[in-house]
Length: 374
Image (cartoon, rainbow, N blue to C red; front, side, top):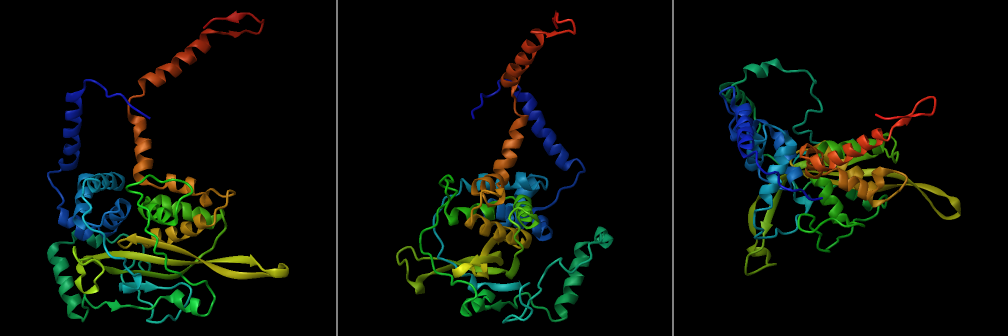
């Protein structure tokens, strides 16, 4: 689809941009980027995930510029990402290396290493806390002083906790997970093609708009596929990122640690009935995998559900159709196309309007069969 640039209106556009800034600062106050990064963790994590760019400061800046609109913030951050040179590829990260901050299983009560509740709203009352109206930096600092004094240390993280599903694999209850060393496709450099590879699907799912991914997964559970999965294990924590030495690639001793990323990882268990020999039916489990930047558990779980659906296509359900799902969960693609409806469509609409007028002029016949001109 192509468009012709609209001539004129430069001054109107400039005034529109000024008005946009006025709407943001009209109260004479502004919110600092560091304040956004410190106090809007969930929104920052969502924008980083959908932008596929892990940088909390830039995500906070995009949120400020977009006035808190996540779709616009993602658009801004993806646009910036496209200008950044790719200088290195990190080494493959094994999720077993995660410094776990939160870890739960809905499948087993007792898991090796224990359930770690961590930071979550799952156990809070969904009531407005009006005390936050008066919260100040001084109040926060005093609370932190008492909290840390009670014995909490932010760097107390548990390392290398075993995977829950590994125990099911040892029992032969789920198939083993084999290493796949095929270089993954990169949807940011090459357009998606069908049939898609699993690496493409996982990339688009983790970049997908959080609400869309969640809604599609909800549709699966509600009836479009009728799955009722269980969270085998959900983890939130940080993973170390290392790169090879420029001249000694592959040498473990010369790898450079360049930082860490906070992620959410989910392994879902999907019960399926499989028909064996002589018509015998048995219950087995399939796996769905979810992995997103930051702490975004709902999206990671939903991603795991859709991953399993797309691994087992079924044309009876749109939620199992890779073209339907992958083309419609991207926030930039979907909001961009909807927003393009605001652009001038004068020529095409006038053509349609002329057709309507022509039809009307052709007239209709009255009850006596005479032609009536309009």
